[in-house]
Image (cartoon, rainbow over all chains, first blue to last red):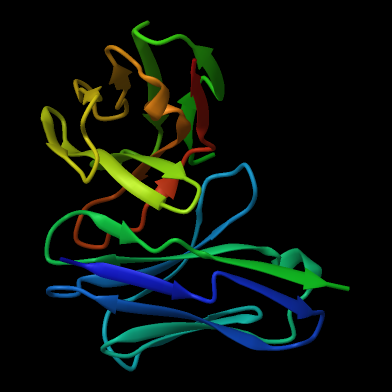
Amino acid sequence: EDQVTQSPEALRLQEGESSSLNCSYTVSGLRGLFWYRQDPGKGPEFLFTLYSAGEEKEKERLKATLTKKESFLHITAPKPEDSATYLCAVQNSGYALNFGKGTSLLVTP
Amino acid sequence: EAQVTQNPRYLITVTGKKLTVTCSQNMNHEYMSWYRQDPGLGLRQIYYSMNVEVTDKGDVPEGYKVSRKEKRNFPLILESPSPNQTSLYFCASSLGVTKNIQYFGAGTRLSVL
């Protein structure tokens, strides 16, 4: 059975304090790993897709990386507007996305 | 503007009173899906549809029905809602299943009393 575990559950950072969020997964035949951002009361917003180990994607202060067992979302010099819940999801050889429970990030000024 | 639209956004109902939550997308996406999100449990898939007239169960389908008669619409039906179906519901769509980048609606917060 596919499993997606995100850590930490919650993270509080000072503005400018870089850190990483972790997504560990077990999946039969990884078709893709996805990162989403979710703001309170809103639907998840797509950030990145990674398809194979060694792949990296960047967008502004965010960088996602992938190994055979885990993915990291690196946040460089975060700003308060980066505060949100970050969700990781994996797609196996089937059609469904299996989501982790998310990391709630708070960036304080 | 490309979007997934859910209605209603908020709904309070009573046990046993049938309800439908509508979902519509304007991106000509083939794949559509319904999720529920509960504190501590994350997003769990209820049903999905790979194309018109093709639907399948997700992880938590009990108590729900869906239909896909048109490509753009994918309503979620609760025939006899119960309090354990109180949750935040999201509809999502994607171009296909190979690269399943899903675009989510704004959510429907349902309370069943």
